[in-house]
Length: 297
Image 1 (cartoon, one colour):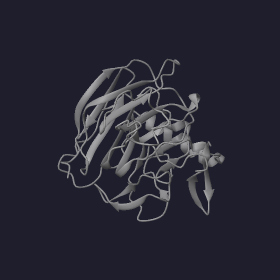
Image 2: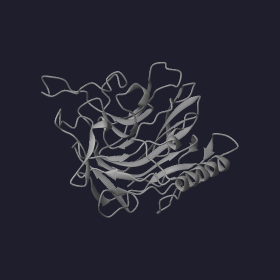
Image 3: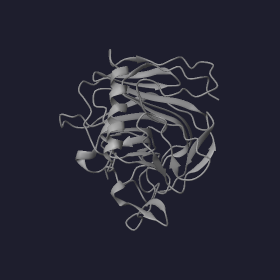
Image 4: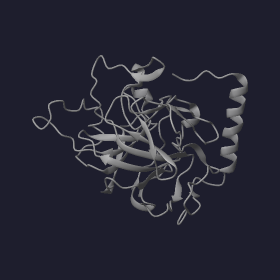
């Protein structure tokens, strides 16, 4: 599923990546500019790799404002609604609710990364988690990282169609609304998962973030450090696509009547579908040390 690029496209991407590395030189830590009191979303900066503002008024095209232009394709069950800044993408409990970005080597950030977004969850999942964003599949060599909201982990007889258990080994306890970050180490050791100390609230805009610098994982809620964990190593490189707002096997995605959608012949149940809004999703090439989002509303 890796994209085929023309030589000119490859050269442009190589120059963009070189610029990101040059501007980010001098250490993995980066202090983000203060946003406190701001009424506008922050622009891409020197370590921004991708920034999906979710400001499209209609259609399935999701534009990336970062240097590599990682354009996403939204499933037909997503909607556009008012967001934290401008517009946002609304996700439903449906297999057709997602944003898909093809895998690319420039998304491999093994030694340092930051993932952040504004989220407005309307419900927590009934299974182990509902991903905000991830580069993770059921193929071992395509498991990189996963940033999720914990769910209830309901089992029979409470529900008749329990989770297929894809993430039970990662997210080992019911934790509705808590942030989870999991990654597969490059040294082939077992996957590691880390959880926030408190949940986010329903029906409220919350800024959430996770950073990793090769030594520690840090989770942030509304700009404040919530928890940190020693975790030495680097994240496994992967050609996995990036999936926003859902989790399923991307090998079963196909085009039908112009829409990108997963095949539902096997099991159409949307076990891991996120329900709510996502806005200003950013991935950075270094572990930011400060998040100062404006007051939530």
